[in-house]
Length: 233
Image (cartoon, rainbow, N blue to C red; front, side, top):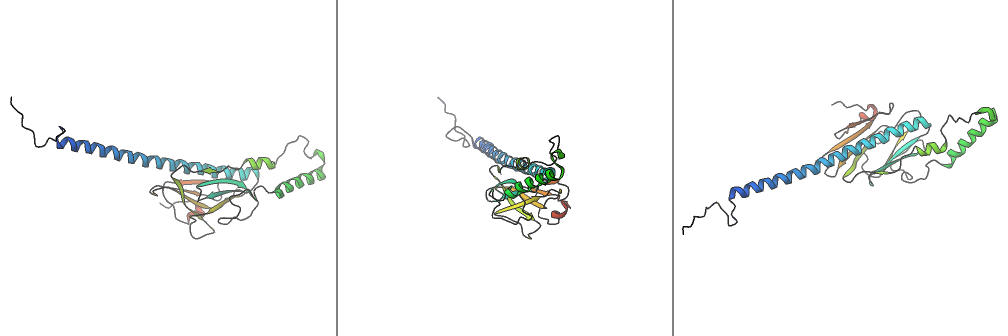
């Protein structure tokens, strides 16, 4: 019986060195594709969260104008969430004491002013002042219903920083509020979202007078855009 000589390039398992290298290349390629897929998913989540927050800001601007009430969006950078509420506070500074609570939201004084306004109208014009029961101004309950419940970002999405006009340095922790006024004006703000690796960014830049919110797929740090909402690039 003749014995076939064993090739020096064949392993004891019957695979050549070339075959082993091909398998290694395939495994490395599949691993690279999986990492790419994870990165793509994170970028997609980041874009979706930025678009959802953009919609929330536009909605709040609309409700403030329609309801004739002052709203604010409270952004919690530590918890990674935001919500909107109604307030009669003229100015909201960084990390207000009541930013994350219900205190000061739709205060009883607002209801009392509304009741007094109705009483004065009745005294001046009598019961016929509104003979068809048509309320031209939104009720207290309608204004309250315009607020947005707390919304948390998807896992892996966070707020990198928030730029506001009343502070020279970006806000990177705590809470910050953005005001939306009944006259159609909103406080200028730049909100930068990123992922855990901080290699993808989306920036929200609002226009104070028009209610528009522009979305950029990059990190915006130009404070000139706080007033104009325009990108020079």
